[in-house]
Length: 265
Image 1: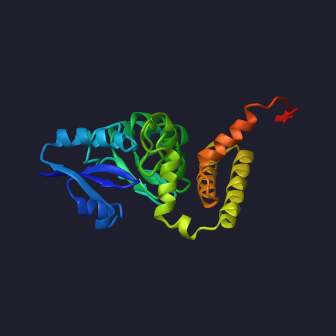
Image 2 (image 1 turned 60 degrees about the vertical axis):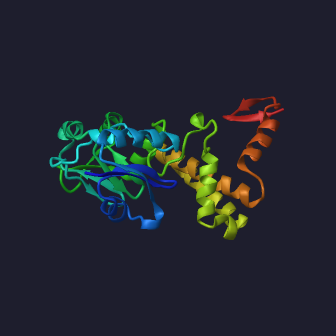
Image 3 (image 1 turned 135 degrees about the vertical axis):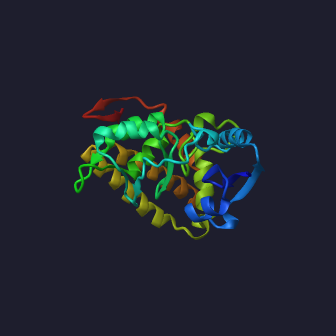
């Protein structure tokens, strides 16, 4: 049997036995949107290479190697919608089901998710009993995806590489700029439109803060960083220059805290 190590630029590196089904039909990418890094009949070797190249490219490194995954998860027939992932059991029995299916992966609108020792903890903390069937329960995909991004040294598929490993590698901001460039934002984008977008995202943060919705606060802050990165480029400067300029000013400021806000002298 032949195993293929494939790369979807800017998204993920994975292994499959069936490229057409896994990459094109399940994940929705065309033949020109991915390429094969290698193929091998040695599952242990290709599994090792998958982890190596995930780290080299700054993608999330799978907690469970490909050769250790469970492909026949017959006891876990989850239902996936745009908003939620629903589990076929009550909350009281969910942890056992999850532990029996460590390594299981599935695709959502917010990227690939999986069951690991860490995500089991998050799921059990955030799972909700279905209003229509108390023998089923669910989690929100967006919140789950955000947990993945913010609690893994190498973010989930589609996530942004963390800077602490970026020595000589692509930075967070470089990935954002490449994403925007690939979509024509710098060629056809408008600073005015991006400025309005920024106001919208700040409003989302304010609403989430008032609701004490931590996951949405994280989401909003991240979206603001993306918009600011692109806005800077549209003005002919880099976000790094803007940050350096701002820090050069505030680093010399003195003042005091008044009603929760720093007031400069």
